Image (cartoon, rainbow, N blue to C red; front, side, top):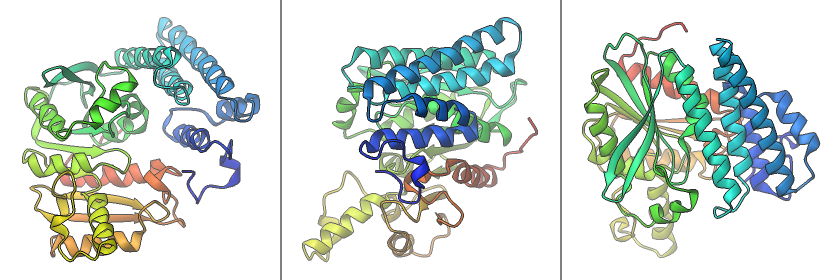
Length: 371
């Protein structure tokens, strides 16, 4: 769905909401170094309206141009320029893959190119990042990027950043990593797909234990000598993060969490209860008990845009009814007047991420440093 608060200038292809939403994401990524406005507008002029093949071709071409610039800069020792171009290249490869069918081989080729750009970025970063494999279930492992806060090897607080099933972690390298680094936080960027193709998402969605992936990530972080394990938080990027909310209930080792808090599960319970005149919400089927109906062992931040799918007033009522006077659940609503009001803060993710990571810094006692 195209965010209602966006102007017509941001809507590239009104008859294709997926393409328009992706173009919006690319424009906002420019704020964090994942794109440039000039390149996005150049591609927009070249695209045939609604042309899926044209979209893939043009973004792949632009990704290659940025990748070649990165390689040239790296060869000449210009690490900052190499990093910037690899970040843009991986984002453009992701854009090229977006409209293609999951079974389309060109999509997988673009994903592999995106991942290679991510790996090259990690090697050019100081301190260098790592590609990590984390055992999860018998037939499947998680894959992540670990970005240490400091090259000194000192123990630092850390944040796990993860999206929904099917979301790939590479976007976090430009979207969230700078916010973590500026505040002295190490970051583990994670996705559930591991080394599988995008069509593995269907298998993931059939699992009833997605929340167990977070325990596996925590087990991994506990082994690292450069992580202050008493100060580990999690950020569920995007909004539909109920599997992370369930993980927060089961994972006492977390020091703070940013997720939907089970708000969407509670909203569904309320909808079904009102529709079928039920007075007992406990009989409404949901995957697990929502976080806010139970008690978490750590502070929780929920952020919401007032123009998103769930109305802010309704969300406030759910939170007030569920928290039972607890001050450990914080709801922040971004208004249209300040931006960040779209679903998942799509119109201004930078503003939301600044608020989120400031809150994390306060909770973890991290010490920010000038980069």
